[in-house]
Image (cartoon, rainbow, N blue to C red; front, side, top):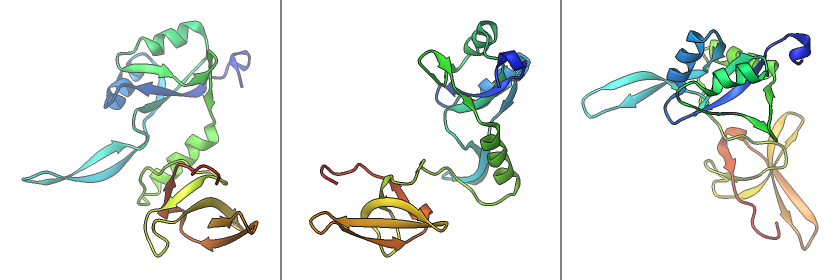
Length: 176
């Protein structure tokens, strides 16, 4: 989809720290459709506990607009906007299917929270459970997440099934 199709795309708008809601409000005032995914979190203060909505993607609001110089400038001129994500001077649209999936997840009222972006083959560290502290590659096999640990000298590996929520990105050691 492009401007030629006369269809506005979704873009990730990077905001100043803690400006997500303010940017969303201003985008609406300027006539832009926006989406600020948030989840409910309980915060503890000395005298009380309170449930608050926290942006799911800290520092980002999604906005739908045409990639024209005029609309870019209107978005970028919004107080609190740092940039619109892209590469090489070109804006990078966000796939509608991805935002729809996020909306469905949040609308389902399932307990959800931010999670580091992981993809198959990423070097990860297990942060809890019986494998805590181990590092290896994250792979998927028949829909299950597995931690793969290799012994280079043997050119052999071993894999263990685990919950993908129990891992976090890690820096791959030299030679791994």
